[in-house]
View (spheres, rainbow, N blue to C red):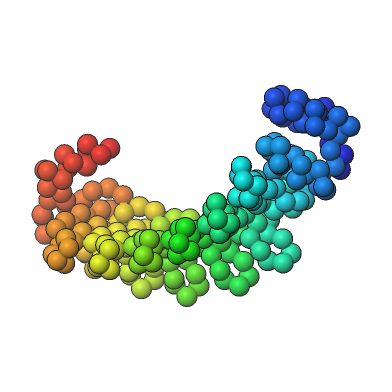
Length: 251
């Protein structure tokens, strides 16, 4: 498709970028096509052209050394994995290693057919530090009950796990907490129970939120009823006065 500056203006394009576009392509640019990379290399928003004109193609961004640092594949103006199953979005570090990738279907994060996570992030040492599973743009646990979201520290040790149903934090069917946090010694230091994205005590009456110190001693328990603090059945305070003051300061 031959795109001109006037066509860009008609769709609300930035005037500064439109003027630069016209200077580079006085007769218009063929998008997608060889002109797309030229648009991207000039620092113009090629992704915007693909989106606004509902075109298919790949947007790329380079660093000052000429290394590709970002790629996004579009189909009819929306982020969408290409036919070979590669992720629609990828980012690279200065050395050219992948540090982030995201699978999309029709503009929404979506796990590919092989069950890989829709979103994945690596540190510069090549260690996976985050994975998130999505269905049609919503975080969703896997069918085997595995958590939708997991994060690792720089050494590859699991430090966080969150369960989701339709993008809402939710305890899985086995009653495990929706959210678990681990310290660097691989010991759990916090658990949180949720129902429909609201903190809520589990059926056994345990506290919705529990925290431990490094030696495994419970140091805090807080009870909730659909997101609201509540006193447990034994009549103990939901929070100590000091905890209430600390929470109010955070708010």
